[in-house]
Length: 143
Image 1 (cartoon, helix red, strand yellow):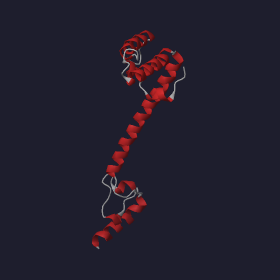
Image 2: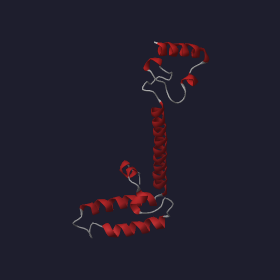
Image 3: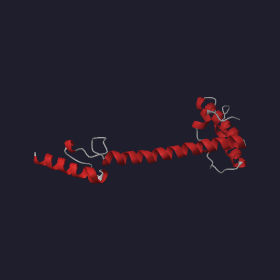
Image 4: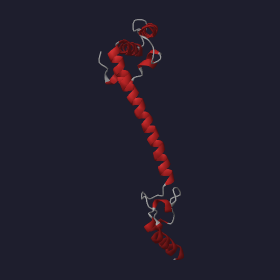
């Protein structure tokens, strides 16, 4: 069975209530238990039961087919890694936003009246620009 986009959006292991390392026997056992409780014949008045039963059947097909399960696990792992990368980048972005002046410039801007708190403004300037930097700062403070 091919793994569809719809199946990739679902967590098939959580749907069946099993762990990722579960053997085929455990997958089938969990499917039978869940399928009995939500079978459309046992719940004719519940339209959600038929949909859930269909999802359980698809989960069983994917998780009992070795190739489909490997493909599903590979995509699931890639999504998890992408989410972790995004979270780390978001944390870095927050730190950068907190440490910056309202300007997006890397160099300190004397005309704004304040400097970046971290790192120090001198740390980002080459040695040749330090003299000009301090002269402009002094001129601004004196005027």
